[in-house]
Length: 323
Figure (cartoon, rainbow, N blue to C red):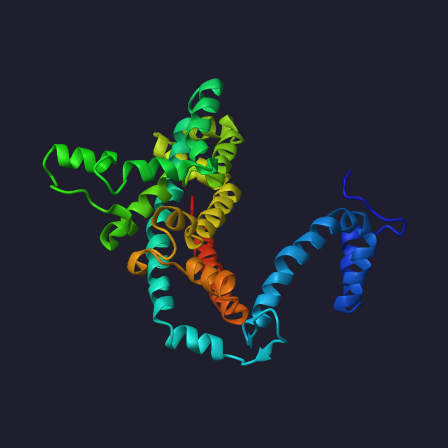
């Protein structure tokens, strides 16, 4: 006997719903489904409201103000695409910021993503107590408020800084290097510190994802011909972790394009010769310093679409995992 439920008139409810859908307009069918599932919609309403107010609305307002001149005191004056034209054709510092941002994103994004996953994969093989301890050790720098002091001491600009002291002792240099006041060293050092801080939310998501992979899949894989850990990783682990991989990718992209706090804390704002000036710094300059909110909104809008494009690219790449 079939387990498919039937209605009192002897029809399959899914089939009946499909038939009824054909007799309705799209909006009528949508409203009907909302009435049927009103409890579910009621449950998600708080999140939907908060998401709309704090995410969707700011994005829409940013798009609107990017077409205006607005100083937060006077009524916005529409200039349409003038802010974007000025940004892309008449703002040399912004072009420098784009170049630096892409360098930071191209280096720190993939490396921090792979580093987070490989460290999580390694830690997952430890015993539970050791796993918790090692996770804390690796995760702690990303949440520590005083973490930059360590690097400021190591790369202090006088002879008492650890880096200068060692280089002078072994006669590599004769006088101290002004590490964060020299345009040659600012970006590489900031990238190194960013990678050190990269084991954050993505790292925890990967550990959580590895914990929920059923061990029976590995046993079945061994029967089907999987012979080593790399094949297990590619054909079993990664396909079963696609949601965590995507979440980690979003967080990594957001962090790599939103790169700014590391530079500001180590090299000041602005950095010497704008050597590590990023889009986030440019946005903070015009939005938080000059209060040119229309121009700052144009910067934020371009950054938003850059992140969206990067997320779509990564999503397409991740869809090929395990295929």
